[in-house]
Length: 307
Ligand SMILES: Nc1ncnc2c1ncn2[C@@H]1O[C@H](COP(=O)(O)OP(=O)(O)OP(=O)(O)O)[C@@H](O)[C@H]1O
Image 1 (tube, protein in one colour):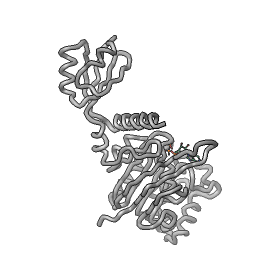
Image 2 (image 1 turned 135 degrees about the horizontal axis):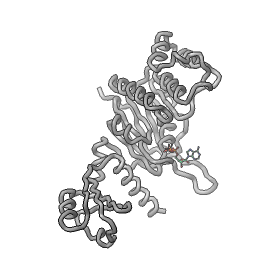
Image 3 (image 1 turned 180 degrees about the horizontal axis):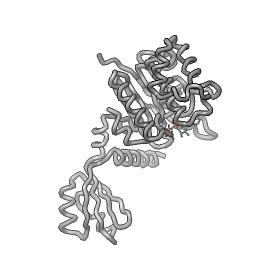
Image 4 (image 1 turned 90 degrees about the horizontal axis):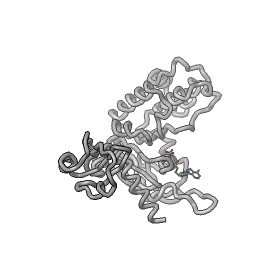
């Protein structure tokens, strides 16, 4: 059964500024099927949080439509089928950890056993009676995860979920999310950590300046930035020589090392070693990070050209 979890149609959000309104989300469209794990990637200010806030019904779209599990955003959030972990919101400072869990559990009429289980799963028992404001950032984040999982949601929306977590916390979080995904839940997360997207997501939606600039399986997005990176040590090489090299799409000079992107790495390596002074030549396949940098810089160029 492949139910549609999320539909986003021609979604726009503009914010007033002193002058020209700021279009934080600019006519985006996507559909996510139940059971997909999707990473929203994008540089600071790309529009990831604004998009997630519209999915959650926290921010009203300027125009366009959002549907979650067949419900509009607000009803989706109220139903308990959709849960969120957000960067800063969602906790009351003067409640203890256990009280917070109980209050949220009672709004969904959950049995005590479910609350105890999630306290255990997220390692909250050791500081159950601590006030939220006295918990560390990582402990508060664990509480947010426990609260999000409490109603056994079908869809999880996570805005930079592992920010501020130590290595153990991060590992524990992702192992729980792996389990949640294996159970067929849909997971959408915004992240700056390309490694997390690469390791965990089936699909990546790359956002820049409020627009989707790539959407697809990680391997496809990586491959859309064609070819490989070839690096070589070549002290004092002239730009005029680099400009004339065959088989090169693009190059960057960092002191004595030149990084080339190419679709024909074998031919380029052969040329460099046989016909030039370059040495210590290395070939690496394009990483998601290369794709991310290349696609965002292309879209920055287009935005500059348009303005
Ligand atoms: N309430 C608001 N009022 C005015 N501008 C806003 C508001 N919220 C966000 N913006 C602007 O909208 C743009 C997108 O912001 P958003 O927080 O969605 O980006 P992001 O991709 O989540 O960034 P980050 O990775 O830094 O968290 C930014 O330019 C931001 O300054």
